[in-house]
Image (cartoon, rainbow, N blue to C red):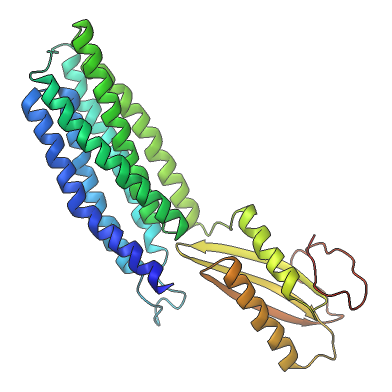
Length: 312
């Protein structure tokens, strides 16, 4: 877990100088061409710089250990970063539209297009590689802030591609209006991407459960390592950044000792941790014959002494 936190923080840190470098390249591309589409692309990159600083700040805060005021940790701070990044993505799209609309009536073909397009293409390639790294690492280490930052940069890549297409069409046809039109089309796509980032992050703030695939892994781990228990029910889960909180009730024979029940709990916690790293489990022990709480999970019938407990 510690190595995962270090890796996430390191990537978030390097996102700051990298976003500054890409913004510099895009501003250079706009300077040599005067293209409104390239300017709109550079404007979005200024938002990327702010987003990178925010992502690093929230990732660092989320890594703080639990304390008296936050006994379950600070993991949800990453969701705040992701929500704000989604808003910034949408703000960038609005900035692009504001810059492009006036040029629909006063459009001009860009100067030095080959040099400007080459510089912008280089910035786009750098962004594409970096976004891929952020999203992959963010998903594998369950970091909402990194995933949101990666998707934000992906939207920047889409902008760059749209800008390049628009400029090439304008140069090929002589219709300079295609430059601002393409900028507006790209902005609409960025708005949609921003909305998706916001909605996914809000779901995390609302204690969304694990995915069905992850829940199946958790159930399989319980089924395999719950030997000695009679029944498991009322399984709940919620995600908070890199941490996942899992709770369920476990029925044991009424004559089982506390020590024996505790051994089963320890075994289950280790198995669930292995199946779903970052999990924190709370297991409520119930003696046989007590009325079950919550929703019962259907169990497959098993013969006496047949081994592991299986969940349907």
